[in-house]
Length: 95
Image 1 (cartoon, rainbow, N blue to C red):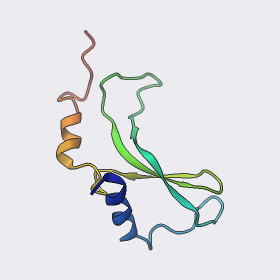
Image 2: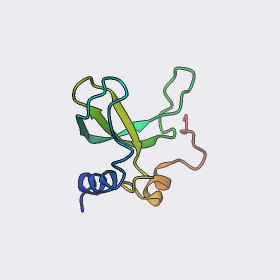
Image 3: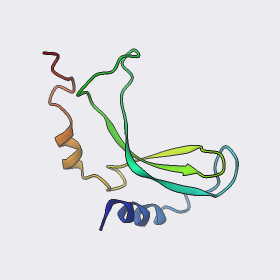
Image 4: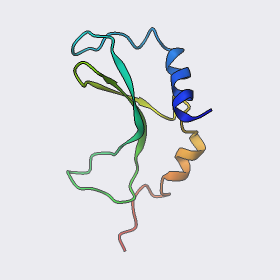
């Protein structure tokens, strides 16, 4: 099963949690095509090779409000895949 279908199946099992958009009160959600990466705040600087947290985006097609759903918790990315992506120190090698 591809990631999109896997997520759709997972989110459909949680439909009581996904309702009206908290911004515009519409129920017009669409699934973004790509898995998104959320990075920890680092004083405004970018840490190359640093930790990221994978998320799936659900966007309201009426107002653009986007909800992030953790891709590991939803089963789109396995915990093993996620752990393999994190450097042991959580910090990129600077040189």
